[in-house]
Length: 294
Image (cartoon, rainbow, N blue to C red):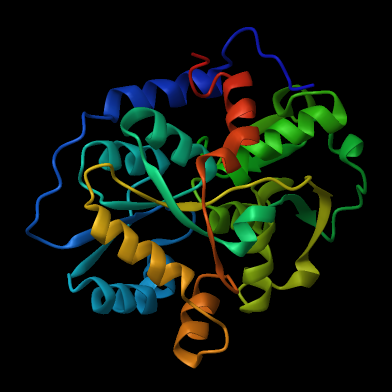
């Protein structure tokens, strides 16, 4: 059974208001100018730009267009700018994809292999003597963004199912850092006692030497779900959308240049993406009142 929420909590009322006051109607994507790709700002902008540099070069070659990378101010800004027609292709988390789909008909193009089997982790400091979730009653919890699938919605959903209490009922304070790396920084520096973040991003930080694994440990890991996806604007030409999709799907670890792109993006290959793949997430989002039930 999914959690039924009869009234919208404060965190939900705030983010619903943010989406509907910032989103605009779609504008026509012109034939002139660069192809714009907006990326969910789940990490520091400079890190995102570095990760996408090799892919941008490949897409410019494949499409014959200049490609501009846009890192919005926050998750709501990504949906609003995509809905306004300022972004041709969005790299969305699951929740922001559903919002963009419902608002203007975002079309999924491709997803990383890791996105088909995503999880989130609740982390705590290794030095903390508490070992169970129950012992963290009254502690401080750090989520990522209200719109983050892996840093908020699915951790919230599975935490409630697993432990029988909402995060607000169990923890003493619930805060939103805005990005996965910032949530981890909050944990390490003691701002929060527990941080809920994407498992792949956490693992990548460890692999890249950004985070010393000795400093933190996993308190709880969620079941798997589907998350991120590249999706095109309905105003994007079919030819350009197909070129971008085929370029992503054609990346192979056996090719040195392709492998560098894939590793930058935290993937080993790309998969076809279809709307039905987000049915479970859609049900959770509707159950929690994040998207309309109609």
